[in-house]
Length: 80
Image 1 (tube, rainbow, N blue to C red):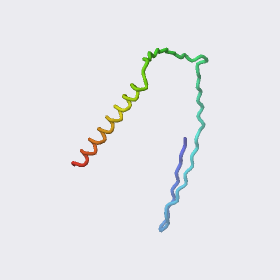
Image 2 (cartoon, helix red, strand yellow):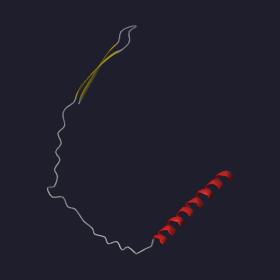
Image 3 (spheres, rainbow, N blue to C red):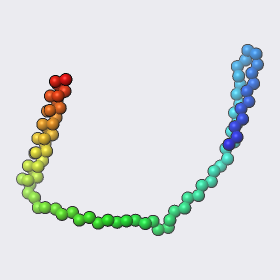
Image 4 (spheres, helix red, strand yellow):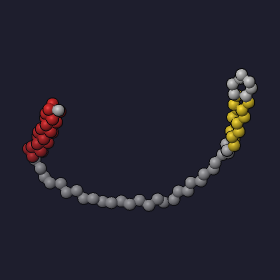
């Protein structure tokens, strides 16, 4: 890349600037493997039988814990 700057000034006049740039093209080569190597892992998931009642209890417990946490945060903020 070549950059040249020419400045000409005269008494009482502002500076004039001329900039020229010459950019040479760049070539790049990318080579990819024809057959990429992939690893496959198998996992087994064991599920237990459960009832709707058990799921409902777990959801209710989570909701109660979340509500309690929000209530505690509100109290702490109120006390500041």
